[in-house]
Length: 239
Image (cartoon, one colour):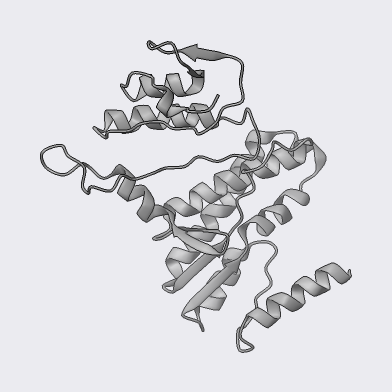
């Protein structure tokens, strides 16, 4: 249709005219091996479309067995990884993060979201570098993860005077942000980091009263306790 033709046109305009295209909706590991014979860099675009091809060709009865679909997707990803590693050339995989929004209302969309997340993890674990592009800005995820998990400097103090900040954001309520923040507070505390939770504003009636008689959100109380701290309204100034 016109929309897809426009999208194809944009893709072509953004890429050099001397690029060679290999179309491989299935068994793309064979295309990787073939392309690597005459090229030193391969761009696989993209994993999520490839997974949709895999999912949409399955019969209804096979889709009912979610564990089998998970295995099928992971096996397909393993073949791509093996082909990339055996190619001897630079391979760049493009994918999409489809799990950042609300939970889809239909089963096949939920299944697709799940297998995309599993395959993204699988390919990212095998990759030398992983970049998340947000608002056009590439963020080196593996480098960021190594900085967060690195040990403290000798003497137990922070590695620099500037504190590091981790922000958790979601597109709706009740999607696990508070639980994840609590877990991170405990993990960082166990690593010996000096960590403090903060949420600027809470819209909730289920409040906690601090020792000095002030109110704050219960989620930040749990996070403070996970970080080994006494809850303070400075962690949640507006309730």
